[in-house]
Image 1 (cartoon, rainbow, N blue to C red):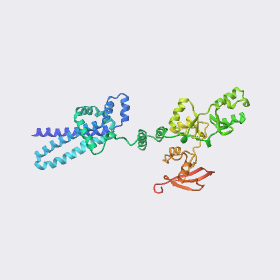
Image 2 (image 1 turned 45 degrees about the vertical axis):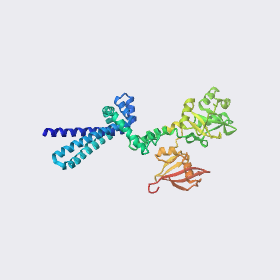
Image 3 (image 1 turned 60 degrees about the vertical axis):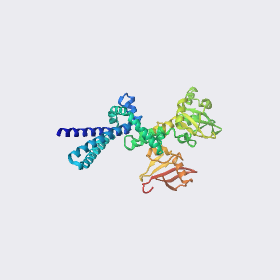
Image 4 (image 1 turned 135 degrees about the vertical axis):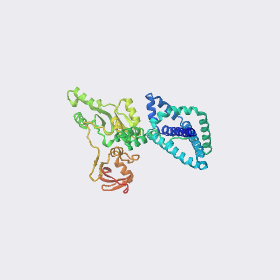
Length: 425
């Protein structure tokens, strides 16, 4: 009798261990990162290949695991019930229910699933070979179950063949990056760089270009000596050159070509043909995506383009550096004038130049001001106010207070931005 009791208890324990195995496997294989498995597979990990194969047929995988889990749980409960009936009579059913519920819940569900959710990749790699064997062994039964489930769902009006993620792959990647940043595993600079790459396809040149009001251009009719001095003082390697009127851009003057010509003429500036040194300007539409423009820069081995609107009017210019700055942030060299346009105040407010792009402000301050309707912070205030405000006027929207500090004609040149507490917003 004692030996028989030991065998029965041993069988129940073995079935509970099997149940824990199936429960942990289910959690690990559904929670594991496909990206991690793909990378391990690329490095030659055979177990990762098995995991990838199993995850490609999730319905069959889950069906096999649930089948195994239910089989061992029901069998363990049946054996335990018979054991308690023999020991305590009819009241043994209640005892068996209480004991098996606690054992299954603690040791076969919560414990293995908790460990698996903490170490999903490690557990998935460990259990994959055995699970693959089980899936293959019970494939006919699982396929029959799949068929019944699909037909039942179809009758109920749910077609699982049309199930799709509500997010695009780009949005899923962005969500993963933001989640890792909140958890502290991705630093802000890395998040901004990865986010910048994802934004390239969504941004147009009008969002990143240097506006025509900030373009440094040169009048071709000026004396060559003045032009040389102007180019050297500008700090730019390439400068648009116009003739007759500022909208008539006839070419792009490269500082290197200009200095080479000056050396060739033995320093005689008046002998230099400025128009002859200019290269043909490259005009691109303002609706071109930043990603397409980057590819175009690479194809043409060019660094500089003029941006035009639908009427052919010059709206601004874009350089390869402007595109790269959308990814890595501001790039400054020894000739750049450092002026971020954002100045903190002791009160917690910020004085911001009106021409500062909203994207740059969000990236610098880790804010989330919308940039769909306007490119600059001044443009956002005008859009939200539905008017061109005067100096001293203040507005509250998107959780911030915006006060106009300076204005030049219809252009807002300086704003004070104060983040509001949740109660104030």
